[in-house]
Structure formats: structure tokens, C-alpha cells
Image (cartoon, rainbow, N blue to C red):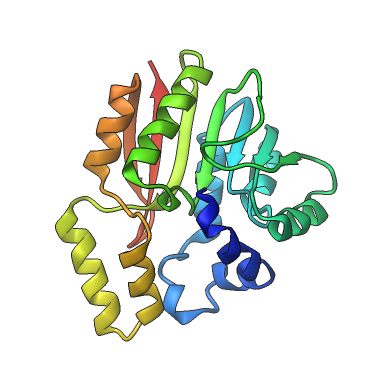
Length: 212
């Protein structure tokens, strides 16, 4: 994820797990079905998995439970420390983000949850191009994140958050780089992927790209 968000995740590390289980009413719908979303991402992944935005290690645990080998990428030292405590050495976690990470060989799947929106559309395109070069035929990108079917839907989500008094959520939607499914579909197809989308909750979709 973009380094400009590093301070945010350093501050969020201690309370992250409380947020994702729905105790923050403002973000309850964003994280609705959180465990199911993690399990879905894990079930669509295979082989040697590179996970971006490990956070506190929740998706990593799901990937490991599915028998996958995981190399995690996480820019926040505080998040890495919490994740390493949970994972007990079962996965390697490296400093890095979506665009800048150490050389990793023989990758089968790139995965992420709740993080790709920290990149602009141009950065998303650069990232997907990079992953395409690192994957062989059949390799996968499996990302679950907030995205919208159209700009109108995106704008309506902001209006709804404001009308419900969810001002932090509205601010997040306005200031971070949420994008639309057509934009992501175009990026993936232009980089040699077949792509599908599955809606997980009011905010989150599963995006799966398979290298042709």
C-alpha cells in the first residue's frame, strides 16, 4: 500500500481486530462477513501465495489453514509485530507494499484484503502489470476490497454515509482511492488476465484475475 498510509496503520494496529469484528458501528457493514471473506480469498488461492497488507495476520492464518505457503508483505512495523506473534513463524513477513517489495520467486497467487484502495488507479495499473510479469499461466490475483459498479454507485455510497452520520466513513470514501469494477476489469484484461467479480457485502467485492 502507499507509504502515505503508514502512519494510519501504525495508529490502527492495536484496535484493528476490534474493528473488523464489527464493534465499530460506523464500519460494521464494511466488515460484514469478514471471516467468510477471508475464507473465500483463501479458497480461491493456490500454491506459493504473496499476501499484500498482512495487517495483524488474519488472512494469513486462513491461507496457512488451507495448506498454502505464504510470503507476507506489510509496511507497518506495529502490524508486522502483531502478525508475527499470531503466526508463530509459520509465514515469512517482509517490509514492503503493493509496488515495492523484495524479490520473490515462484509465485502462484497474489492476494490481499481491504487494502488495494490505497493505490491510485494509475498505481493499481502499475501494480497489476508488475504482477503479470511475475506470474505464469494460471497464476492468480485474488483481492477483496471496497469497489463500485459505477461512479454513480460510489457517489451514492458517500451520500448514504453522510446521511447516516458516519462522517469518518464518508471521509474515507472521499479521500482514499476507491475505484470501479469497469476500471479494474480493463486493467486486468489489458495485462493478460481473465477476470471475475463476486459481491461479498454492501462494500466489498472479490476480484479474481487468472493469467491467460
